[in-house]
Amino acid sequence: MPSPPLLPRARRASSINPKTPHRPRSTRRCQKHKLGRGASPWTKKTPLSMWVPMAFLSSLPHLPSPFSPARTLAPISNSGTQIKISTEPTCIYSLIIDNLVIFVWVWICMESSKSVLPEGLPTGMVKEFEDSLRPALLVRQSFLDLHDNFRRIVYPPLTLSHSKGPKLRKQVVLDGPVSCGKSIALAMLVHWARDEGWLVFYVPRGRDWTHGGFFYKNPNTGLWDTPLQAENVLKDFLKWNESHLKQLPCQISDPIPLGEGAGVGQLKDVDNMAMPEGSTLYDLVNTGIKHTHAAVGVVVRLRKELSLVKNIPVLIAIDQYNSWFTFSEYEEAVKVHSRRPVHARELTMVNAFRSMMHDDMMVGAFSHSTTVGKLRKDLPDVPEDARVNCPRYTLDEAASVCHYYLRYANEIYVLASICNVEQC
Image (cartoon, rainbow, N blue to C red; front, side, top):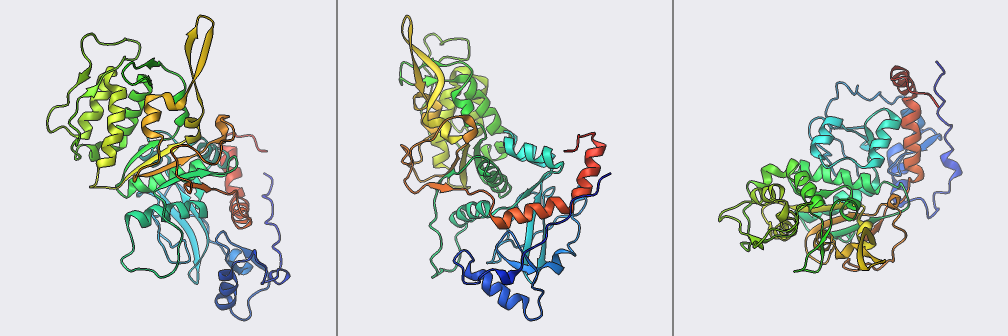
């Protein structure tokens, strides 16, 4: 068995100008006061722009076995903020020296992830688990910023801070280059929010709302109904949120409009369906699942009901959000030999959930793997300051990733040989 590659040699800290603008002030203060005199000149960057002696890195402890994980909780920001990604099966592993976090990886139990995210895991997350042969993710600064934003909205600090922090946004659009971690950051946010007891409406594949299935034009609204997608969305929403929905009463008493069902057409002499008095959101969602003619109307009503929920925090998370700003797969016959493409905004479900011009917490993540193309900066129904750029790995994060894989290369080789995986 070939030996794992050696850890690349770190560069000298003395060769870097401490006054360079690319080096944050907190880094210089950390190096001056934390390392002290006699520190080795050989240093290595950490994911959070901190510098530690290489002697510490050579004595890093091995991660606990994935078959018997031990739950840990560690501060992962300069302000001492603590974060809990998920419930018991998920663990955060980190090494702390003088209150400095050298690296932070989160070990995710696949069974727990599939139960907390029954709608499905992002493609990039599944590919990372398959390629690395271990369900572990790096907790990046982009996710911490996203997490802190919504944490401060729901759990505001008790004392007023005079320091100017980042502006809080209830509506966020994650943008950035291809494969920079937008979908993974969104999934981690949903995982954390559900573990905190929030009511989360999560759509991991927004493109499915505009492709496939049956589509009918509703003569009452002029929009296009997609009952098959509506039924699937309601089923996914019910899997994790059933306990919350049973405790939340319906606050809108208007009857639910009926449309065409999936492959069964329109009901005769019936235009709407009334909900019984005292119904809960669980009853509302079940109605859309059992009655295909009411599925689209229930999804639209659910969006309005979510805006009225005040007992628990509500978060709407949409991946592949950019698919809702271009044309769908559907076409409308104009003449005998002429068809026009149907835009996503003409779909009833997309029209109900796409807008961010409200006071609800909502996150949308762009996905450049859906071949949507580049969209303009000022999107309709989206606040001007909602778009947040997610960068690729910084040098610090790349160094942490390289160190992580190189240190545990032997274990990966052993697992690869057991699974009969061809070594590259």
